[in-house]
Amino acid sequence: MRWRVVVPAVVVAGLVVLLGYGLTRQPSILPSALINKPAPAFNLPTLDAADKRVGSDVLKGHVTLVNVWASWCVACREENDLVTEISQRTGVPVLGINYKDKRGDAKRWLARFGNPFAVVAFDRSGQVGIDWGVAAVPESFVVDRHGMIRYKVVGAITRKEMNKVLIPKLKQLQQAS
Image (tube, rainbow, N blue to C red; front, side):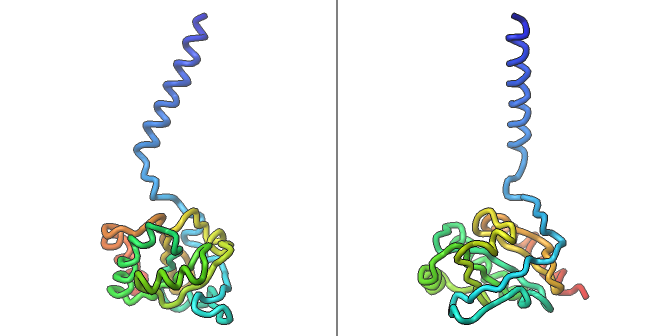
């Protein structure tokens, strides 16, 4: 009879401890297995023209911000102006990867909300996004001049993260030899 009370009480106490610990975590900070590793190779058509291609070679020789986005993504609208501002303030080109979208919808979205991208790769199937470890859009990656991923943002970039982390990280990588 005593075990019938003790065992459930211990299980409930354990679950309360786990829940309490979970509430102290920041879900937007997800470790990425790709940090300090080469960016995954890709070769995709551009959003502008299906017969033109963009590949991972565009990530070499300069620091790049890679932003994975979609026209159906509400949070992508929220961060679009900040992505533009990051590029303007740092001079870092932004490679857009349009994820699981329709070409026409993506083009209309850029015409309406602005295009912060130097070039947009069109990842209709989402396979490249999967290779990059994208769980949901938007996600952004800081890639150094050697093609190594140095930082990842899960979810929409916030002004605070832009000013305190992204811009300093981009400038630091630009100054590194």
